Length: 527
Ligand code: G16
Image 1 (cartoon, rainbow, N blue to C red):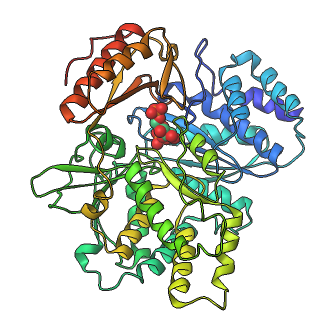
Image 2: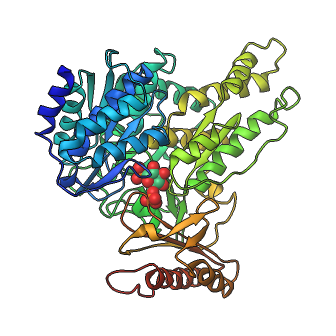
Image 3: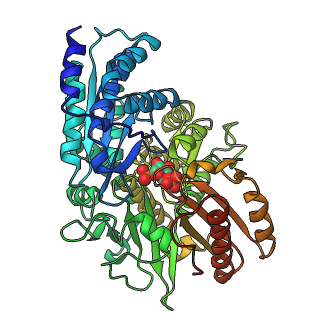
């Protein structure tokens, strides 16, 4: 077949280094950018097959999100804007690791297994972040698609959630919105302006938000979006990419892990601040109090703010709907938005956030229909009419395809404005136990296997018993270890009644990981 001849020729321009194996992890492939050219070409091929198979547009995003600037990566986006399925993640790994001379064989194997009709047309949307390596790597994706005869739309520099949004808009034929950057800004800003009309007499100070753009794509897109917000939000942008390095001493991951302000941000007492990550799919908020203490408002606090707001609105209609009777249930999953997303889809309204600030809200078709019906209800009183309008605009403001720092930020700003809450009021909803996150480098992180939504380690032998006995030494303590799905490290989390105890427990557990799971480099030192 002519297509395979083309693949065979073009793949020589994107050769796989012999012996290199990589795995499609929590958020696609991620490693140093120099190892990724062949992966990108092959993901272009796979996205084309996925498009033929689903008869839909598929997305390919070139980014390594929170990882250092030297890394890069790629994630595939399925037709409704969700992450690609586990089966296709397996195909991604299969294709990525095929040696040069067996690439066609593996490609044909997938075509056969999935019974793909190669005469179907294919369409692939491609986007990239601001890393220096992203331009040539996204070109490799485009080469992969065109060598199998697929059509591409190169969106160039976009945030990851913007590309998810475009894919969903395209495959819903515009029902979700218009698949353009302008369409994204318009949809979100209109919903935001409608919501903030409900917050009267806001001062400029209340509209002010300090935003750390992580020196990445989120900063560029925030600048583009500002005029659409018509001064209803006054953004003070730092780490906008004009000088600093991507994610270096800034960004959501740095702030969450260090529990400290990013470099380059001048925070006034009590002022609301937030940080995006490198591809703007995560956000955390924070402020400092009058004693100069730093307070983090992470994904857990965001989930609480949004779910209490939705619950308040829904309570006005509790006499009408069964589903609202069982108002809030909590569910835990393994790390990774793909796992949370699927769990949230099981509910009428699923609010999901990882503590690192990655999350969104999903409204089932049934819940959206009921809310739309309420808009038309002639028996509604003014209070309920207002609540329904708020719900409707909130749905429009949320990017339901994936966690989106810009959309989440606008939702949070609107909710705080409507409820007349400051960052301190929000923080006071509940008090976090002091906690600490650490990383331990081991020779092979896969020696750690976990169960119970990654809360217990089943291997290596003895590790969980050691953790259990360490935890018993501290008051109100918990600790978990798990291999990272995006970096070559093991993550350690500990919490306890005081910061000293949390730090000490995190250190002791890190030592246990180092000793029992094959730590490399220097032994972890006390904090
Ligand atoms: C990705 C995933 C997140 C996950 C994060 C860190 O985020 O989408 O669900 O929490 O990696 O994963 P880990 O702690 O296993 O390294 P991002 O923003 O880096 O794409």
